[in-house]
Image 1 (cartoon, rainbow, N blue to C red):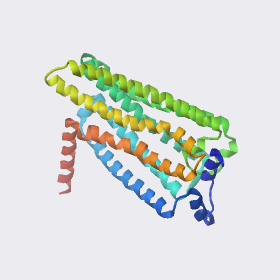
Image 2: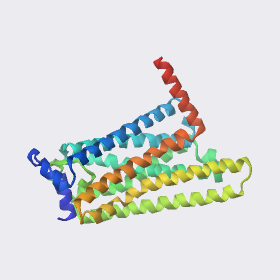
Image 3: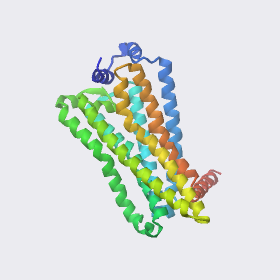
Length: 322
């Protein structure tokens, strides 16, 4: 069975009498499916609670509104929280075999895909902000003002929407009008009508991967050079900034590996559909959920100013309860 026949079979509505046979086709027992469902729900609830706490902390402290790095941090928290909610909703729909119109599914998937790439692009911009703060300190206030940060956020969303705009336009041009009124299980694979569309998507993702990796490496090398020539207290602050950039690089690497997902699935789908299902779940946990739990660590716990505000917010919350 070819790859796109697999996709169509997976997205086609099964009857209730076929559920047991479908599970055997998918190669997963009922216990495996339920364990995956529980793991995802526990992780999503934990990440959402942590993100919600950090978002409340940000909006309760006006001092964060005028600092570029905290504004960008809030953007990652909001985009990740939205992604957690909507992607988990799609996961639940898939688990319970809930169907919807293809037209509605396409709108939901485009929004999910958009915010899937907003975080890597924002992390790249945050690395650039660290580069400006360390290597160009005299121009940091000018280049990273509140107004310029708002403009950068708009640019981030434009850059993030560009690849999926191409995918959506190709999908609209390829699919027939009747296809939009069909009922299917909602999945991002619904956009893949022809094989060449997968190649276009892979090419666009690899281009973004290459550009972001180059930016991260260049910033890291420049900061390393400045850190070597610094001395005393400056060396300590630069070392801390270098560690932050390193964490950003690791987080960004996990996020960028998701761009290899089309290549991984393309090779696996021809061999074993069971492996395809397991790899999809592994990629969702490792490259969609896991990288987004590092943002609270980088700014929620390592940043002294934000950590102090977080403790203050928690103490006020406990006092209100008493």
